[in-house]
Amino acid sequence: MGLSLGRRLRRQGRYIAGLGAIALFGGHAISSLVFSVLGIAPSSPNWSLVLTLSSFLAVAGAASGLRSMLPPRLASLVSGAASGAVLGFYSLGQLGGQQAQWAIAGAVGGLAIGGAVGLWASRKQERRFWQAAIALTSGLCAYGMAFGLGTWTLAAVSTQHWLLALGLGFLTGLYLWLTQRIFLHYV
Image (cartoon, rainbow, N blue to C red):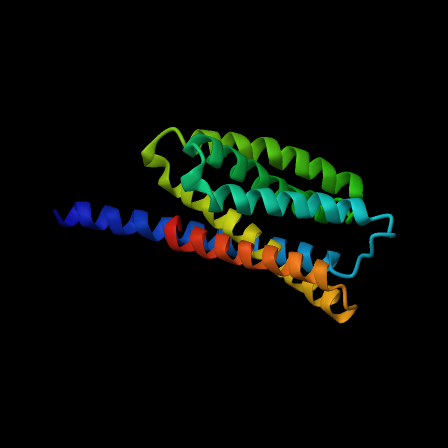
């Protein structure tokens, strides 16, 4: 009995340490990406990267937050793929000297790897660590999206674009709700 308890405690310790490492890396990657795109204007040549990053953050957060409304395998596949794309975008973008080509190649690679891991993790209940890792990363993506939308909401308010501010404020609230839903129900 004591040996079994000791094994379980070691397994739980590795589980928590692994999720902690994923949270640190994912949080750093997503916050770095969101803060780096906040000042980019739509007229900038890098605007397409802002749209790409925002799309991946939005899809990852929505797919994981709406998991109860989607088939589980589809939700895991989509949130894993989008989260992997964000982490790949950041990782290869950093390794490639912040060149757009490297970041996009990282997003494509991360999309494939994250989708494969998401699909693999959704097949068996014993793979709860990977399911939790995908939910954690997707929750960080949802929070990053909420933060980005919140800053754009404040920018719209300061320029007195009230209708845009109202729409962005609604989306900010939606992504905060999705973030809360992910962290309370899946991680």
